[in-house]
Image 1 (cartoon, rainbow, N blue to C red):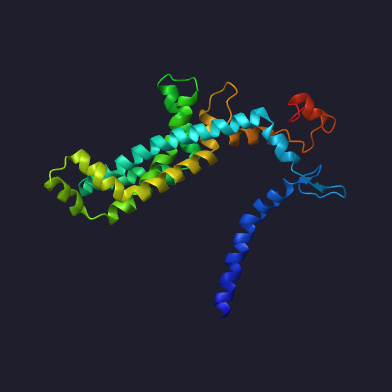
Image 2 (image 1 turned 120 degrees about the vertical axis):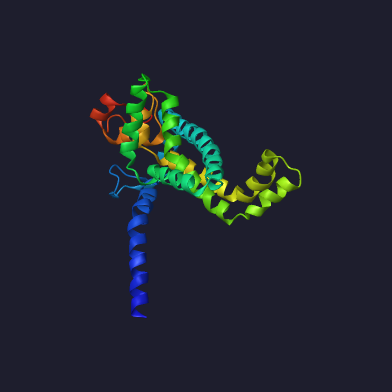
Length: 252
């Protein structure tokens, strides 16, 4: 009984430490205060911060760029990861073992190593101008392994005789793949797409190394750029003159 209570308390403490900062951030997003983290005597509940956020053209453009890159990269990653998982699953043991080891590299490797390697690779092939192509390729390299890991368990649960039965009944390999295999592993494909999409939305390191240099921002790089100089919570240039001179207020 004591061990169970201690275990539950430990889990509750870990969850509290994980989610308390998020809840505090949500709470202060509805409070009109000059200093985030401090509730002053004149602080009031307001939706004005969200109103000004949606009126911020640069922030909305960064959100649009983020979803565009995430959708393109996750779609390509889902296609490549699904086909790769099917191909590896039906390989011989030696080839399967080699390719499974290769698919683990993006998962266990440090993301900054991957970002730097891709940047050097593009320079090696004399593709020095960073653009949307380099950014999407970087996100695909990051997420394709996670799609493979999501599809692989569904393939392992699949009865291999179903594919052979479809061929015996006259189906072509392509029809057997699209009408028999893919519907059986569809939940894994959806899970892989969602995982790839969220990883792309969340990514900062690869994005900062490979994003276009001409004013292109995703949500992560936009927030990082704003945090370097500070974001005034109030909509007034007089509140922070230095910020106003360097970057301009959110809606001035």
